[in-house]
Amino acid sequence: MKKEIYLPSSVDQLALHVLWMTPDHKKAKGIIQFCHGMSEHKERYEAVMREFCHKGYICVIHDHRGHGKSIQKESDLGYFYDTTGNAIVEDTYLVSQWVKGQYENLPLHLFGHSMGSLVVRCYAKKYDDMIDSLIVCGSPSKNQAASIAVGLAKILCFGNGKYKKGKVFHSMAIAAYEKMIPGENAWISFNQENVNAYNENPLDGFMFTNNGFLNLFYLMKGTYHLRGWEVKNPDLPILFVAGEYDPCIVSKEKYKEAVDFMKKVGYKNIYAKLFMNRRHEILNEENPEEVYQVIEAFIEKRGDRIE
Image 1 (cartoon, rainbow, N blue to C red):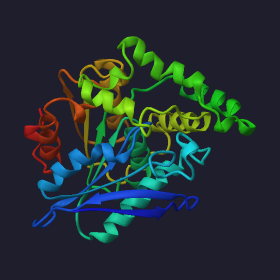
Image 2: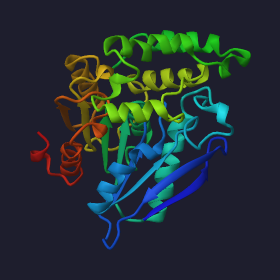
Image 3: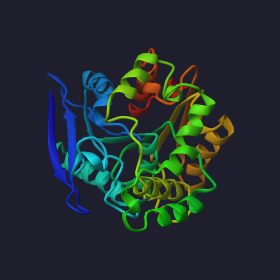
């Protein structure tokens, strides 16, 4: 059963569009909250949500601010209505509070892909006691230039510049992936049908505004900064998953650094897996069941089946 609702953000009352699914004829085993990535929309996760509904999980996702239906007007795609990088994190926490209120006493598993993986780790810095596990998918590796990028984005956001498309940053980031893997957004997936659908949908692949990039850089900086981690729940189970050929992870060594960083801040229960022959969107390649099985084993505490 699929339902939709708008929730007012606790930060600024922006209407956040939320979609959730509940299992048919099954007692729910838990809740999985999904956080989508940069320049996409929540409906791209309906397939994985249906799969986990069949497995007995309530699944929920919202459009991040500046994405999908969480905008004030169409031209605001890629604009975050925030200058701190915090609002998108608080929005995610709000959805957690809401869904936990609807379905009490069920464990909550938080999944974040790509930019969403930055969001959920910034969330965990403050709210790791709200969740029962964390899944970090397609994690962008640490960028040493994040602080410099924040400063440049602030300059370009001056006045009405915050609404302008961030062409400078786009050429530094997304365009760089396309140089590595030729073809319009071919870097996201080996699955050409998935790439075509992404390219054809106006809710996917849009360019962030300078303001959107400012928020993205704050998320990157916050994710990999040692300061601010409260670590209320050091035993929180954490799973990193990514594709072997995902340009976002940069390299296997950088991927390992991202995993090890979570150990450095104080988490003890961490798993990691790289999936062979997959690019950035491991859920949208052929045979997604391989990924589903690993996630299911993880949230059901069958760690021996993750490797």
